[in-house]
Every structure is written in structure tokens, then in C-alpha cells.
Length: 174
Image (cartoon, rainbow, N blue to C red):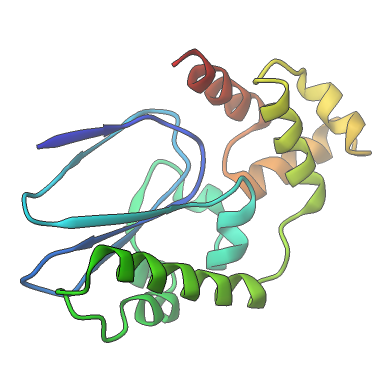
């Protein structure tokens, strides 16, 4: 069955577990369009959506480099993929898979550098304003010049502030 995932502009990690093989773990980059994926009968799916600016620091990547892409985690962060998949049997109940993901990610967060606080504050302001906030205002409120705000936001989130605001408005409308 085809499943449509609306765009949200965030970095996500998705895990598919089947009875006949190791888990498939992919990283979904920030995107402006819906993602269409095939959902397989008998498979179980678990996902992690990272906060704006959080996915890059958590995985040690620049979100802009994976924009509009779905990439196996082992290609981006082999150590993270091995840690997450580990020796988990395919028969593990879904709640155990979720708990395994939660404990691994909590450990990764403790060891990761914090996300850019100015970018987090800008993203929070965009969400609080429901996407209706001028980009120039964002930079000024963060104590940054216009170009510096654009550069830092795009680097940390993988989208421009305007693109991110557009997605926030789209999700609000939905």
C-alpha cells in the first residue's frame, strides 16, 4: 500500500522491521513535497522526527546535504546505524523496538553538541506565529543580521526560514 507523508521540513529516522531480515533504517531529509512510500504487509514501522536544527547535530550531518533525500542511515552515520540495529531480533515486539530507539537516541543526545540556540529560537518563533512571521524580524529577534540568520537557519535546518514558514502554514491549514 502506498502511504503519503506530508512535508514538515524536519529530519526523520524511519525503521522498518520485517520477520525475514535485519531492520531497514533510513534518514529522511527535510523536504518541501510529500513523500510517497510503500508500506509492506507484515512489516512494522517506527520513526523519529527531530526538532528543527536537532537532526543534524543528533546524526552529525548537515541537513542541507540530505534535502529531499531518503538515505540509509548506514551511509550517513555507520556507527549510529550499527548501534540502532545492533543484535535486535526481527521478532522483537513493537514496544521494545520503540524503547530501544528511545534509549539509543537519549544516549546520542547526551553525546551530541547542542543545536544552534539562535536557530532553535527562530524555528520556535516561526511555529508559534503559525508561519506568519517576516524573515527580517526573525533575524533581528535572534540578534543576527538578515544574511547571518538566513545562513545559520538554512545550514542547521536544511530549509530557508521562508520555506520552513510555508510548511508550518501548510500544516496549520491541514
